[in-house]
Image 1 (tube, rainbow, N blue to C red):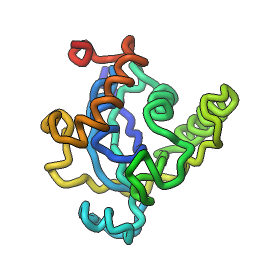
Image 2 (image 1 turned 60 degrees about the vertical axis):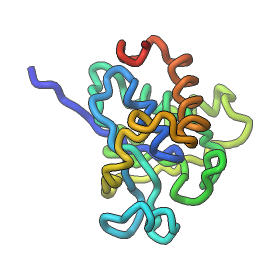
Image 3 (image 1 turned 45 degrees about the horizontal axis):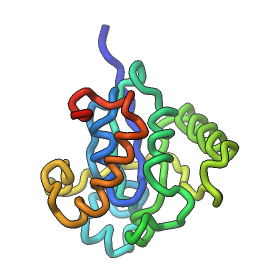
Length: 184
């Protein structure tokens, strides 16, 4: 029987952090850093950072829904960034760093609405969730040097100070959901 995969497109601040986290998650087949939610075809990193294209830094996550559900991917997503800050994650400020879910189907939209309600009802955050929920339009892969950035540059200062602590927090919270290679 052929494996049927799905795609999730999520923005949670700097894509280096998000890619490193989802790379470790059981059921995730591939994670690609890129741009979505803007109006310019095939933008460059410099154009996205200029805040003129409307894009968010995102990851395109290819996953096996028989191993991990879209809702569970969203539960990880909402735990590893602050969805209550508009156009900001830590010191990264601007619309390109916004919290966003670009849904690929009505089922994904409904799942996102349900998970946002679940997290809101649980009181996980003191402030309201401001995550953008929008239909998927296009995904543009980021430049090659952005792919697997944390894995290839763990000692880079931003990676040491920002990415590594987020990955460590994720691995602690979701230890049972990690690929066996990530636990080492």
